[in-house]
Structure formats: structure tokens, C-alpha cells
Amino acid sequence: MTPCLEFWVHCSLLELVSKKAVTAQAAAVAGDLVAAQSIVVLGSTGSIGTSCLDVIRNHPDSMRLHGITAFRSQPQLLEQSLEFRPCWAVLGESEPGHSADDFGETQFLQGMEHAERLVQEADVHTVVSAIVGAAGLATTWAAVDAGKRVAVANKEALVVAGQMITQRAQETGAQLLPVDSEHSAIFQALLGGRKQDLRRIILTASGGPFRGWSRAQMADVTPEMALKHPTWEMGPKITIDSATMMNKALEIIEARWLFDVRPDQISVVVHPQSWVHSLVEYRDGSVISQMSPPDMRLPIQYALTFPERVDCPGPDTDWTQTMHLEFEPPDLEAFPALQLGFDAAQHGGTCGAVLNAANETAVNRFLDAEIRFHQIPQLCKDVLCHHDFEPEPTLNSLQAIDIWSRKEAQRWTH
View 1 (cartoon, rainbow, N blue to C red):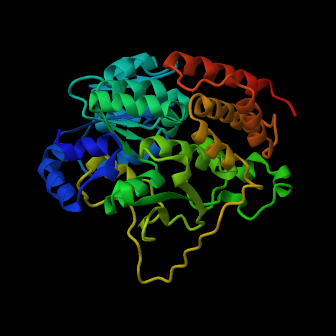
View 2: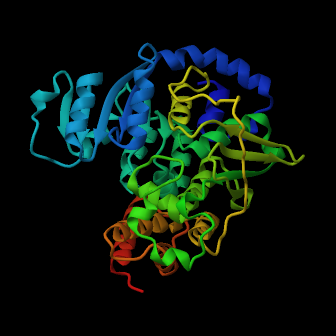
View 3: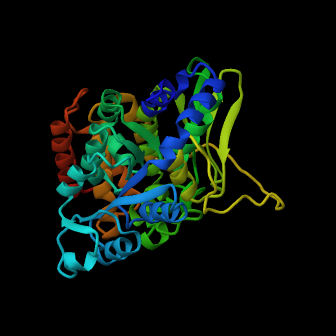
């Protein structure tokens, strides 16, 4: 692996000595990287997974689907297997229905423990981690442990165990490439400067469906209201997170580890058009952003083809149309979840795992009409404030605190 690529892989891209060095070394490895793409998609039936398959579908000469997983959705997993004919397909939860024979050339297995083993196969080049929630941690860790190129769409893995995952990536030579549109934008914008010149990174947030609402107004929000995002089409969990702005809280923690920056170097700005995906500000006042239509196929493809740029199946920008871009500071009083992200990033340790587990449980309880919308961040704060903090947890202690947090969140009352 070249020094340039190691730099990007270990999320230390701010230490490049010159843009010229990036260009020259990237060109030297680009052909091998694209030609060797044997891809596993973890969570292939979700919104990120299906977008990833669309990217692969549009690049049959340079990308090959090696394996797929789904927790449920067996009919969709079968449909994907028959189209792409991967070597294996794993269903997390055992379901009656189709037999292994129905999957044709694809080896069909049940139980996610198989995925943890199979992502480490020698002929797997890239693993797309797109499982929703903390459930994606085990397979993400397995891929990093095996030194794979990991396209990280599962932000929760880095929220829960970011320090451990990035450290393990340095030890194994694994490449961590962001898939979230915001972190992909930062990844690209950081090409424009040096670490010693960085002032801060700025994550953009759409503001969700309740931008401009007061906390009192949000007391009567229903699940149906919260599931209507103004610009993105996503799964229910992340759509609710966007409505509470908890998604941005988790992205703050993710960015802290992925880009090796201090928590005070991370800011958030509300940008309702979702056209500027994030920004990087340097000490001279220059601000570099990455812009594109809000379509996840672009950041997914960039993670798969980096350092090359190739034609993307997503829409192009129509520069013949008038465009208005708005930016405004977030309302921390109306969206207190955002402050929890800054606090968890500052303290580190077990805070990310607790916040993530409490939020996953709170979102489920809200969707089941057990708690109200505005109670989601309050539940998370209460669980976070009452846990036994560990500054340097192990994987086992993170798993234990995850279980504890979910139990506490489940029995929480206000």
C-alpha cells in the first residue's frame, strides 16, 4: 500500500504534504483498485444497500458483487441473488419460505455469524457496511480486523467504538472510507488543505420536517409526521433521527473519530436544500464545500472508486435553473439531541455506545406510540447521565453497556 493510500485509509488525510503528491500516487494505484473490486454489501435490502447495488449495476466491468446480507427481507435477498449471482447471501433471522436451492449459484446461509466470517475471505476487496444501528458493529469490526477496504455507511459502529475501530484499522491496514453524504463531503474537501491549517469541519443538516418549530410545537408530533422528510428518502429509523436531529449528533461523534479532529473543531449548520453536503474551513478563512443533488449514489460510488471519479447513475446539477442556498445556525433549545452529540464526542469512552443504544430504543418506542416525539432526547439524556462511565472500554464492556442502556431506555418513564 502506498503512503498516500495509507494516509487516507487511517483517516489522517490532513497530513498530506501536497496536493501534487495525492494526485501522483492516487494515479499509480487507481487502476488496480477499480479492477479488483470484489464487493460485499452488508444490509443489501435497506435504502443504502439498494442504492449501492444500483451503483454496482451501472459498473459491471469494474465492480462485482461477492456477497450480500439482510436481517429479514428474504424475498428481496433472493431477488438480488438471482440478479447479481453473488457467491453467498446471508439472512440474519431464520425465516420459513425459500430453500437454499432457490438461490441457484449463490450459497444461502442463515445467521449473521456467517457474515462475520465471510467478509474476511481473501478474495473480498471492499465491504460496504450498511446495516442499520449497533447491529452492524460486529461485521464492521470483522472487516476492519481483516484489513479490508470498508465503506462505512453504518455510522453507529463508529459512534459506539470509533476509537477502537480506527486504531485497529491502523494496525491491520484497513481502509475506512465514508459513505454518509456529510462525511464523504468532508473527506473530499480535506484534499484542499493541510492538518496544521484546519480550523474546523462543518456538518450540514437539513433541519428535517420540523425546522423552525419550537419545542412546545413538537409535543404533538406523530410518527406519520416525523416520517415525512423534506429532501431525503431513507429508512424509518434514520428518518426519525433526522427529525430529532439525533442523526447529526451521531455524525458529530463519527466525524470526531473518522477524521481525528477535536470535538471543538466540529460545527453544525442547518442547510434545508441539502445541496451542500458539508464544509471545511481553514485558518485563512477559506471554506471548501462539496455540492451535488441529494442522492446517496454519489457518495457510495466515490467510496467504491476512490481515488477515481467515474460517471454516476445519480442526477446531474442543472445549472440553467436559479438556485437559492440557505444556511442558519441550529436551534439547540428546540433540538436538544444535537447537544448530546457534542457532549458525547467531548467525553468519549462509553458515551457514544450509551447514546446510540438509548436512541435506538427511544425511536422504537416512539414509533410504537409508547413515548412522545419530544421525549426521545430527554430519554437519551437521562440514560446517558446515569450510566457508569468508562473512559477506555473494551469491546466486551461496550456490548455490556449497550445491553444495559437498552434496558434502561425501555423502562424509562417521564
